[in-house]
Amino acid sequence: MQENDVAIKRKVGRPSKQTDTREKLLSHARDLFVVMPYDKVSTRLIAQRAGVNIAMIRYYFGNKEGLFESMIRETIQPMKQQMEATFASDDHKNIFEFMRIYYHEMNKVPQFPRLISQVMHMPPSATQRRLFEKVFSDIGRPDHDLIFGKLQAAGYLRDGVDPKLCKVSFIALMVFPFLAPPAMLQLHGIELTETFLDELLDHNIQLLTRGLLRTNY
Image 1: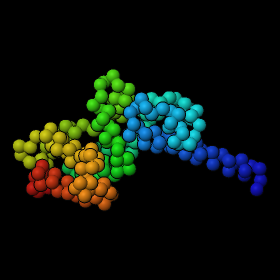
Image 2: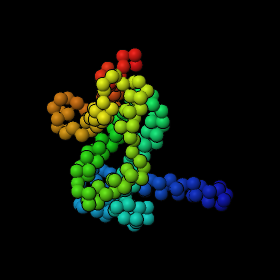
Image 3: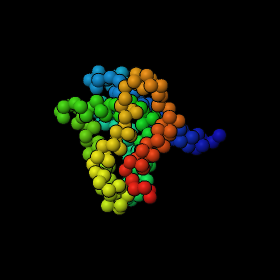
Image 4: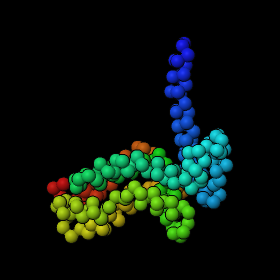
């Protein structure tokens, strides 16, 4: 192999190793932050779990706050990308597609919705809450009031149905499986597998269709 070929091969391999290090830090940070208080999760512990030098946290994220913020942002980014396309029109099927995307993405990190719930119960001054609100403010949030209002204006909703109450019902159906205590799910023989979530999605679509939409939809 010629010298130039060796140099090219090294260049090609290096970004992959760097990417792996960054992803390991994000993955292990997520695993720790969802089960431990923010103040108890040190950068040293994250680096040890990831098997990398602690200096890599400073290199990629600056500090623990930067790592926590990046973890939030990149966990929800895949869902956000599809949400933008999903909510581009006022087709009633968009709400079903959004639920499907949510189940698919959160099934990869089932403790993440519980982390969000815990953080949003904290005082506004708490570091975790401040960082969560910063991320959601930066990326924007889906306006469910507008979405169900658009469906009402387009004639999809049943007469007398309140779009705001539709939003509450929709969110409750979507997030409950991930917020329910695991012991309670086990008590009822429920395991959050991909197959179960697919079945639950079909069931919830039927509930929403029959309860909220006109019969011709």
